[in-house]
Length: 212
Image (cartoon, rainbow, N blue to C red):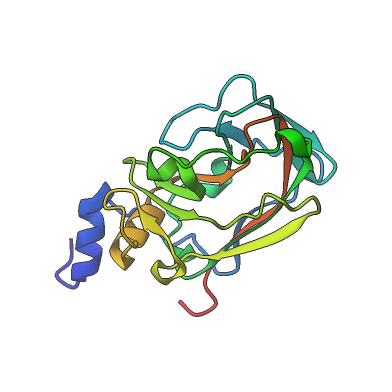
Protein backbone atom coordinates (compact mmCIF):
# COMPACT_ATOMS: atom_id res chain seq x y z
CA UNK A 1 0.00 0.00 0.00
CA UNK A 2 1.39 3.37 -1.00
CA UNK A 3 2.24 6.05 1.52
CA UNK A 4 -0.21 8.38 -0.19
CA UNK A 5 -3.27 6.29 0.78
CA UNK A 6 -5.77 8.53 2.60
CA UNK A 7 -6.92 7.78 6.16
CA UNK A 8 -10.49 7.44 4.84
CA UNK A 9 -9.50 4.69 2.41
CA UNK A 10 -7.64 2.86 5.15
CA UNK A 11 -10.72 2.94 7.35
CA UNK A 12 -12.90 1.59 4.52
CA UNK A 13 -10.49 -1.33 4.18
CA UNK A 14 -11.01 -2.15 7.84
CA UNK A 15 -14.82 -2.24 7.54
CA UNK A 16 -15.18 -5.04 5.01
CA UNK A 17 -11.75 -5.73 3.51
CA UNK A 18 -10.10 -4.52 0.33
CA UNK A 19 -11.91 -1.92 -1.73
CA UNK A 20 -10.83 -3.62 -4.97
CA UNK A 21 -10.34 -2.22 -8.45
CA UNK A 22 -12.40 0.87 -9.33
CA UNK A 23 -10.95 1.60 -12.76
CA UNK A 24 -13.90 0.06 -14.65
CA UNK A 25 -16.54 2.14 -12.87
CA UNK A 26 -17.89 5.01 -14.96
CA UNK A 27 -20.30 7.89 -14.32
CA UNK A 28 -24.02 7.91 -15.25
CA UNK A 29 -26.04 4.70 -15.02
CA UNK A 30 -24.11 1.95 -13.24
CA UNK A 31 -26.85 -0.68 -13.39
CA UNK A 32 -30.47 -0.80 -14.52
CA UNK A 33 -33.43 -3.14 -14.96
CA UNK A 34 -36.15 -2.14 -17.43
CA UNK A 35 -37.73 -5.63 -17.60
CA UNK A 36 -38.32 -5.37 -21.34
CA UNK A 37 -38.01 -9.08 -22.14
CA UNK A 38 -37.71 -10.83 -18.77
CA UNK A 39 -37.45 -10.53 -15.00
CA UNK A 40 -33.68 -9.97 -15.37
CA UNK A 41 -32.85 -12.34 -12.49
CA UNK A 42 -34.56 -10.31 -9.80
CA UNK A 43 -35.46 -12.34 -6.75
CA UNK A 44 -37.19 -12.24 -3.38
CA UNK A 45 -35.62 -11.97 0.06
CA UNK A 46 -36.23 -11.23 3.72
CA UNK A 47 -34.97 -8.14 5.47
CA UNK A 48 -31.78 -9.50 7.00
CA UNK A 49 -28.67 -10.67 5.18
CA UNK A 50 -29.15 -14.00 3.36
CA UNK A 51 -32.70 -14.31 4.72
CA UNK A 52 -35.05 -15.87 2.19
CA UNK A 53 -38.59 -14.71 1.53
CA UNK A 54 -41.45 -16.89 2.75
CA UNK A 55 -42.09 -19.70 0.21
CA UNK A 56 -45.70 -18.57 -0.24
CA UNK A 57 -44.53 -15.41 -2.03
CA UNK A 58 -44.44 -15.80 -5.81
CA UNK A 59 -42.87 -13.53 -8.41
CA UNK A 60 -43.52 -13.35 -12.17
CA UNK A 61 -42.44 -11.17 -15.06
CA UNK A 62 -45.13 -8.92 -16.52
CA UNK A 63 -44.79 -6.34 -19.25
CA UNK A 64 -41.98 -3.91 -18.26
CA UNK A 65 -42.07 -4.98 -14.60
CA UNK A 66 -41.90 -7.88 -12.17
CA UNK A 67 -44.81 -8.61 -9.87
CA UNK A 68 -44.81 -10.50 -6.58
CA UNK A 69 -47.86 -11.77 -4.69
CA UNK A 70 -48.24 -12.95 -1.12
CA UNK A 71 -51.05 -14.53 0.84
CA UNK A 72 -50.66 -12.95 4.24
CA UNK A 73 -48.50 -11.19 6.79
CA UNK A 74 -44.98 -12.28 5.80
CA UNK A 75 -42.50 -9.46 5.15
CA UNK A 76 -40.56 -9.69 1.88
CA UNK A 77 -38.43 -7.61 -0.47
CA UNK A 78 -37.58 -7.45 -4.15
CA UNK A 79 -33.87 -8.36 -4.40
CA UNK A 80 -31.64 -6.89 -7.12
CA UNK A 81 -29.50 -9.21 -9.30
CA UNK A 82 -25.75 -9.48 -9.83
CA UNK A 83 -25.56 -6.36 -11.98
CA UNK A 84 -26.27 -4.28 -8.85
CA UNK A 85 -23.47 -5.86 -6.78
CA UNK A 86 -19.74 -5.41 -6.40
CA UNK A 87 -17.55 -2.37 -5.94
CA UNK A 88 -19.99 0.48 -6.54
CA UNK A 89 -18.32 3.28 -4.63
CA UNK A 90 -18.92 5.48 -7.67
CA UNK A 91 -22.61 5.38 -6.73
CA UNK A 92 -21.83 7.44 -3.61
CA UNK A 93 -23.81 10.69 -3.74
CA UNK A 94 -25.62 9.20 -6.73
CA UNK A 95 -29.15 7.85 -6.83
CA UNK A 96 -31.22 4.68 -6.61
CA UNK A 97 -34.53 5.10 -8.43
CA UNK A 98 -37.46 2.80 -9.17
CA UNK A 99 -41.19 2.69 -9.82
CA UNK A 100 -43.44 0.75 -7.44
CA UNK A 101 -47.17 0.24 -6.95
CA UNK A 102 -49.83 -2.17 -5.75
CA UNK A 103 -51.49 -4.04 -8.60
CA UNK A 104 -53.80 -5.67 -6.05
CA UNK A 105 -54.56 -4.70 -2.45
CA UNK A 106 -56.67 -6.33 0.25
CA UNK A 107 -60.31 -5.19 0.41
CA UNK A 108 -60.90 -2.33 2.85
CA UNK A 109 -62.39 -4.68 5.45
CA UNK A 110 -59.08 -6.59 5.74
CA UNK A 111 -56.62 -3.86 4.71
CA UNK A 112 -54.49 -3.66 7.82
CA UNK A 113 -50.91 -2.44 7.81
CA UNK A 114 -48.24 -4.73 9.19
CA UNK A 115 -47.56 -4.05 12.88
CA UNK A 116 -44.45 -2.13 13.95
CA UNK A 117 -41.32 -4.27 13.52
CA UNK A 118 -39.42 -5.90 16.33
CA UNK A 119 -36.12 -4.99 14.70
CA UNK A 120 -35.15 -1.94 12.67
CA UNK A 121 -34.39 -3.78 9.42
CA UNK A 122 -37.85 -5.36 9.38
CA UNK A 123 -39.36 -1.89 9.00
CA UNK A 124 -37.01 -0.71 6.24
CA UNK A 125 -38.39 0.24 2.83
CA UNK A 126 -34.98 0.06 1.10
CA UNK A 127 -31.88 -1.81 2.28
CA UNK A 128 -28.37 -1.88 0.85
CA UNK A 129 -26.04 -4.59 2.15
CA UNK A 130 -22.31 -5.23 2.20
CA UNK A 131 -20.84 -8.71 1.86
CA UNK A 132 -19.81 -8.66 5.54
CA UNK A 133 -23.44 -8.21 6.67
CA UNK A 134 -23.28 -4.47 7.31
CA UNK A 135 -26.50 -2.79 6.09
CA UNK A 136 -27.92 0.68 5.60
CA UNK A 137 -31.67 1.26 5.43
CA UNK A 138 -34.30 3.87 4.62
CA UNK A 139 -37.63 3.70 6.53
CA UNK A 140 -41.01 5.30 5.75
CA UNK A 141 -40.31 6.04 2.09
CA UNK A 142 -42.90 4.07 0.12
CA UNK A 143 -46.59 4.98 0.07
CA UNK A 144 -48.43 1.62 -0.01
CA UNK A 145 -51.73 3.30 -0.83
CA UNK A 146 -50.59 3.99 -4.39
CA UNK A 147 -52.44 1.89 -6.96
CA UNK A 148 -50.65 3.49 -9.92
CA UNK A 149 -46.93 3.40 -10.77
CA UNK A 150 -45.13 5.81 -8.46
CA UNK A 151 -41.53 6.94 -8.96
CA UNK A 152 -39.10 7.00 -6.05
CA UNK A 153 -35.55 8.36 -6.06
CA UNK A 154 -33.17 8.02 -3.12
CA UNK A 155 -29.89 9.86 -2.81
CA UNK A 156 -27.03 7.53 -1.86
CA UNK A 157 -25.56 9.84 0.75
CA UNK A 158 -25.45 9.92 4.54
CA UNK A 159 -27.57 13.09 4.64
CA UNK A 160 -30.52 11.40 2.89
CA UNK A 161 -31.93 9.66 5.99
CA UNK A 162 -30.11 6.31 5.83
CA UNK A 163 -29.81 4.37 9.11
CA UNK A 164 -26.80 2.20 10.00
CA UNK A 165 -27.76 -1.35 11.05
CA UNK A 166 -24.82 -1.57 13.42
CA UNK A 167 -25.65 1.51 15.45
CA UNK A 168 -29.30 2.31 14.78
CA UNK A 169 -28.14 5.87 14.11
CA UNK A 170 -27.71 7.97 10.99
CA UNK A 171 -25.18 6.49 8.57
CA UNK A 172 -21.76 8.12 8.31
CA UNK A 173 -19.78 8.81 5.14
CA UNK A 174 -17.39 6.06 6.15
CA UNK A 175 -20.12 3.46 6.60
CA UNK A 176 -21.74 4.46 3.30
CA UNK A 177 -18.51 4.07 1.34
CA UNK A 178 -17.75 0.81 3.11
CA UNK A 179 -21.10 -0.72 2.14
CA UNK A 180 -20.90 0.51 -1.47
CA UNK A 181 -17.35 -0.83 -1.82
CA UNK A 182 -18.64 -4.36 -1.18
CA UNK A 183 -22.27 -4.09 -2.22
CA UNK A 184 -23.86 -7.54 -2.07
CA UNK A 185 -27.55 -6.68 -2.12
CA UNK A 186 -30.19 -4.05 -2.78
CA UNK A 187 -33.62 -4.82 -1.36
CA UNK A 188 -36.84 -2.90 -1.97
CA UNK A 189 -39.86 -3.61 0.18
CA UNK A 190 -42.89 -5.24 -1.41
CA UNK A 191 -45.09 -6.29 1.53
CA UNK A 192 -47.13 -3.82 3.55
CA UNK A 193 -50.42 -5.47 4.60
CA UNK A 194 -51.39 -8.44 6.74
CA UNK A 195 -53.61 -9.84 3.95
CA UNK A 196 -52.96 -10.88 0.35
CA UNK A 197 -51.46 -8.23 -1.93
CA UNK A 198 -49.60 -7.90 -5.24
CA UNK A 199 -46.87 -5.35 -5.92
CA UNK A 200 -44.99 -4.42 -9.11
CA UNK A 201 -41.54 -2.90 -9.45
CA UNK A 202 -40.19 -1.34 -12.66
CA UNK A 203 -37.56 1.04 -14.08
CA UNK A 204 -34.84 0.38 -11.51
CA UNK A 205 -31.67 2.43 -11.96
CA UNK A 206 -28.49 2.90 -9.97
CA UNK A 207 -26.71 6.10 -10.99
CA UNK A 208 -23.37 7.63 -10.19
CA UNK A 209 -23.10 11.13 -8.83
CA UNK A 210 -22.96 14.00 -11.28
CA UNK A 211 -20.81 15.82 -8.69
CA UNK A 212 -18.41 13.22 -7.22
